[in-house]
Amino acid sequence: MDNNQWEPKRRIEHQLQRSLSKVGESMLESIEGLTDPFEITTVIRSWLKNMVFHHYAEKTAESLVTTLLKTSATTWRMAARENSNGRVIYDALRKELQGPVGSSVAFQINRNAEIIKSMPLDIARQVTNYISDEAINGRRSEDIADDIRAKFPSITRNKAALIARSEVSKTSTALTRSRSESINIPAYTWRTSEDGRVRKSHRHMDGVIVFWSDPPAPEALISVKSTLGKYHAGEAPNCRCYPEPVVNLDYIKWPVKVYRGGSITMMTRIQFERIA
Ligand SMILES: [Zn+2]
Image (cartoon, rainbow, N blue to C red):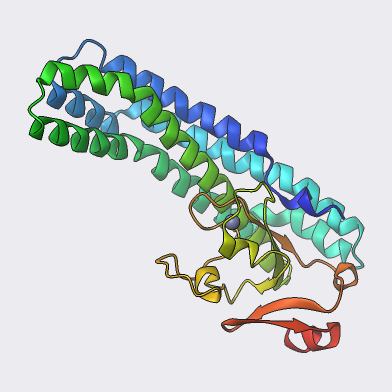
C-alpha cells in the first residue's frame, strides 16, 4: 500500500489554519482604535471568557477530529482489504465509537478545544512582552499601540500556523494509536513527511519500526541535547512525521530497523515475531 496514505491530509491542516486565522481577524477588530497598550491586552484577555469564542473553539476542534477520523477510516479500510485479518479491522471500525477509540476521540476534541481557547492568552503574553520592551526604550504609548495593531495579523497568523501544524499531526497520531491498539497492532513504521524541513533526529527515525508501548527519544538517539524526551511520530511540536501501522508483516521489507528499549537494531522477520 502507498505509504503516504497514512499521512494526515495537508488540506485538513490548512482548513484548521484558516479557522484559527479568523479568530485572529476578529480579535484585531476588537482592538481597533485603542490607543492605550494596556487596554489592548485587557481586551485580548477578555477573549478568554468570551462564550461565543468558546463555542467556536469547540466546534472547530470537533470538526478537526471528526474529519481526521473519517479520512483515516478510508485508509484503514484499504489496509483491511490487504490483510488476512481484514474482518477484524472492518468490525472494529464499525463499532469503534463505543469503545476506546470513542473515548480517544472525545479526549482529542477536548484537548484541541482547550488549545484553541488558550490562543488569546498566548497572544496577550506576546503583546505584553512587546509593550514592556518598548516602554523600556522610552517609546510613546500611542506608537506602541499602533505597532501592536500593525504586528497583530502576523502574530496571529504564525500562532494559527503553529497550532494547525502541530495539532493535526498530534491528533492524527493519537487516533492511529487508539485504532491500532484496539485491534492489537502493537507497532508502526515511523515515516517522515520528506518535505526537506525534516529535522535530523526524525530523519534518523525514518523507516524504523516503533512499538506503541515503547516510544523513542529521537534526539538522544543521535546524541543531541533536547527537552523533548520520548515521543511517537507526529507528537513533537511542528512535526509532520506520521505512524504507518504495521498491519501486515508480509508488506515489510525484511530485515528492518526496529527501535527497542533505547536503541535501534536490524531485525529479521523471525527476530521481530519473537518480540511482537
Ligand atoms: Zn518529525
